Image (tube, rainbow, N blue to C red; front, side):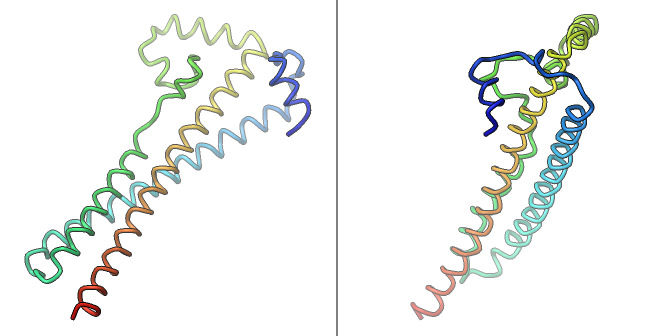
Length: 182
């Protein structure tokens, strides 16, 4: 970790010590763009995972009665697929903010959507009057979008893990029932 970062963290200094310059603005803009791209990728992965799981679920349910010898295995796989679908759908739900901060993020729609325009405008003007408040608001936005991204990818990972585990258990059950027990 950078010594300046540690100093700012420990002393809780303000951003007034940091002179506004284009490098900072570019760094923040780049970070926001990357977070937005990653969020879009996460949503696409979750949508693909959800759709493919629903297709698989539909096929297995329609074939369930036709394959009575695989009824138990199919049922187990269906449970894992349902768990996978649940995790992928949870990853699509937006999480408004990290409740530990208890700070209003005036750049996030979930924090100002129930605020009147006059209150929103007043708060934004107050933020824009100070470079320190502007940077703090941008950093809060970056941090909260990172927390949301972390949650999205965590649930997508759990969804993939559940689906793959279901396939592995399904195959192991088939091997045990067909090869070892017969």
